[in-house]
Image 1 (cartoon, rainbow, N blue to C red):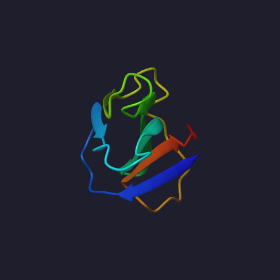
Image 2: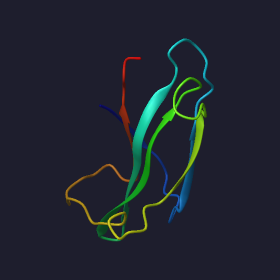
Image 3: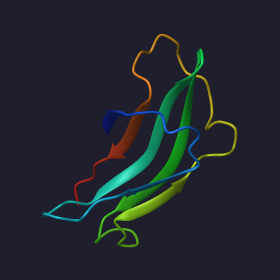
Image 4: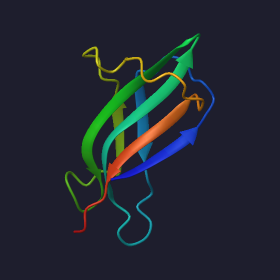
Length: 100
């Protein structure tokens, strides 16, 4: 599993994210497990989970390289996480790379 962290400015409460790639180059497709947005509002740290569990690949799954993801609304998407983290807000991409 590869995990990518990107520090960004706060965008407030997010309900949807759009993620894509241009498909350039051989083997450019990848599997996206989820996107996690971590942020701190006041003294409380939060995270929003955008599950995907799909390929972004012209030759896998449905062939799409763009996904619009909706925040998980089952209550587990907005949860406090360990205090003491100092990199807010942070975007975390959880990807799993498969050899095809």
